[in-house]
Image 1 (cartoon, helix red, strand yellow):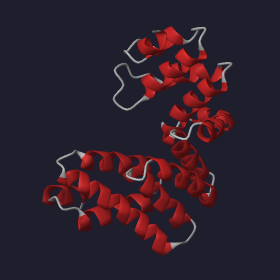
Image 2 (cartoon, rainbow, N blue to C red; image 1 turned 60 degrees about the vertical axis):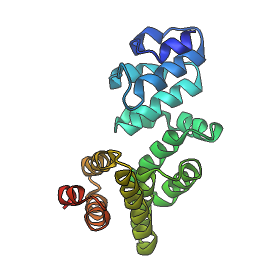
Image 3 (cartoon, rainbow, N blue to C red; image 1 turned 30 degrees about the horizontal axis):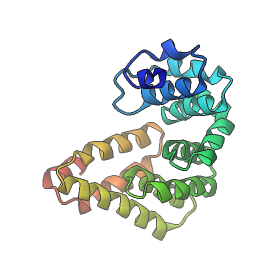
Length: 205
């Protein structure tokens, strides 16, 4: 019942001292999900880095890494444990891949992304970040193929009248914030050339 409450929009801090690690983990995951009913601040999430349960710490650190908060870097071992232990946890792998790119280790980033793509092969974000890992490793053909795959998935979503262009724009904005300017520019060029929606092409141009 308490775990269900964690997903029902209660403030994250209300679960900080819950005796069940399953409830604390569910609370962090629910409060940091995209579109969460009660979004958590980075300070709210960081409070769970002191949790006694590695799974809870890993979930909190994953959320912080995805937000670009350096406090998540202190618990990358917990994120890696979460990624290895939970086959479905794509975000932990995505967060670790981003951290490895920031460290200048594209080969390690690509290994995490390849694991994530086994679970979620239709995620444009994963393909775009894989493209960046290839670009950092000076592999031009795989870079272009990965970006093209991500753009194609965005195009398919637009064809279904889904707001995939919003997701693409958000991803590009994140890359610009992280100073991955070449990746952002490459994605925008590919999108402008390949997307079937004329209005979307104009926006990305």
